[in-house]
Length: 254
View (cartoon, rainbow, N blue to C red):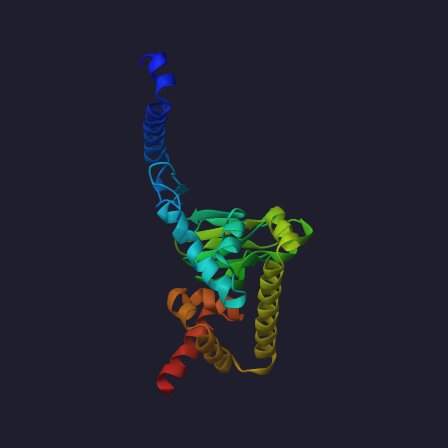
């Protein structure tokens, strides 16, 4: 269109600009996976476009369990959730794949969205000693290595195909300093972990092996169903043969 016609009819030029902008927005939405939203109240839909990026479905699901557990301990607003999301990193592990190996520094805290993990140490004879399990909604890391930046003496690997949410040391420190609710959440996590460790220690010194196994399956029924028995035996400090006899006695007594 000739330039003199545009200058004579500015509204016509505005319409052309609007059509060009609309086409650009459509291309942007198609290429980046964005969704056009309804115009804000009080704005003409012909003049205002609001675009919001849609997170990939898989990534959105990756954070679902994490925020569900977070909100159980310390409810968040949508704005606060969006703020935390920028510090999170999704990660997938295949069965038997390592998250951490002995001798490496633990650089992240991992929250399990899907799957099962374990942490364990290996003695000089090559015997594995499992120190913890983690299912959906649980957190796993070598906290000592994470806090001190010293090489870990533990290994962490996947017992099943896993989907994790990772939080780096830098992200952890920044959230601690900028978000009181995150500090509260971490404090409650550490408190719960300490209470569980205390109960485990008391059970080890005060209960018989049969009583300890009964207590274990009562508190952690999902682990008993999903984790191999020889690993449960390792966690309890028993041989697989001893655990097998314990299970037989318990089943026969029913």
